[in-house]
Amino acid sequence: MIISKGLLFQEQKNIIQNIFEKYDASFDTIKFRKYYKCDKITNNFEKAGGNLEMADENFLMRLADFTNKFNEEFYGKIEPKSYGINVVMNGIMKKNLFQWNIESNPVAILQVNYDDFDFPLIGFVYVDQNFRNKKISTSIVYEVTKGLLFNGFKECMLYTDGNNIYSNKSFINSGYKLVGEYVSYYKKE
Image 1 (cartoon, rainbow, N blue to C red):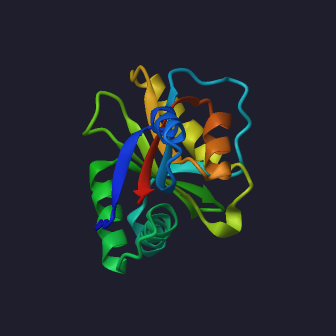
Image 2 (image 1 turned 135 degrees about the vertical axis):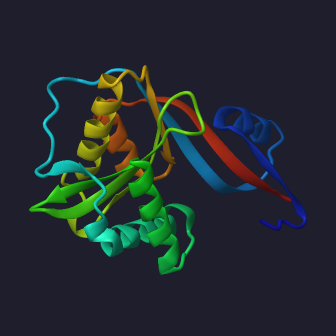
C-alpha cells in the first residue's frame, strides 16, 4: 500500500482511538478486525439444515468461486479464477478446507490454519449469497470448532471484519468470545 502525505497507525483499537481523540486528529479507518476465541462449545446448539464435509474436488469450480468471492468481500481484491482453484486444491491436499452441503451441494466453505500458531485459526468462512441468514455460517463454524476441541485442541481462534455485523453475530452464536479489536488508521495531514 502506498500512502502519501499522512501516517499509518496499526494497533489495538482502544489504544489508537484514545491517542487520536486526545490530539483531536482526523483519520480514515483502513482496516478494523475483531478477534475471537473459543475453548468450549454449548451442547444445545441447533444447527442449520445440511451437513459438514471435507472439501470435495468434484466441486472444485464452485469452491474456487466461493474463495474468490470471499477475497472480494473481505479484502476488496478481485483474484483470477486460478487463485481460487489453487487455494481449494491446497486445502483439499492439506485436509484443512471444509464445505457445508445442502442436498449434496456445497453452500459454504471454511478453512483452518494449523501451521502458523499454537492453535487452529479459522478463516475463509464464506456462505453463498443465496443461503445467507439461515444459520449456515454459525453452523459450519460450530461444527468445525466442535471437532477441533474434541480432537484435543485447547482453543480455537478466528478474526473477522469488525464492521460485518452478520459474521460477528455468527461467531458469537457459535460459541466464540471477543478477545480483541485491531485497527489500521490513516492519519490525515
